[in-house]
Length: 84
Image (cartoon, rainbow, N blue to C red):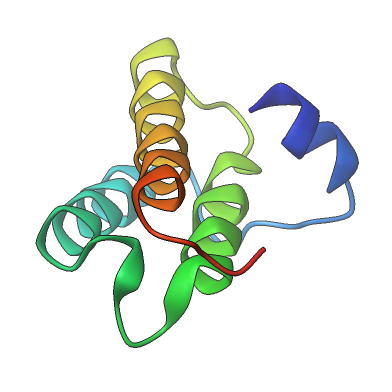
């Protein structure tokens, strides 16, 4: 995930330390229910996870949760072809 963040260094986050947990919970809920094959598609969800990942001051556990979400998206592509 670090490579992704470095590549998208210009990506900014609208989240703060106060509301980032709610954003992560939302992504976890949506991606576990709908997976990467939702109405919005892979690219949308990957961008959302990257955007949250760009939040300053993330704690280790928050980063780990975001990395799991990126892995979930990548795993979905190994089972079914996804857009990139």
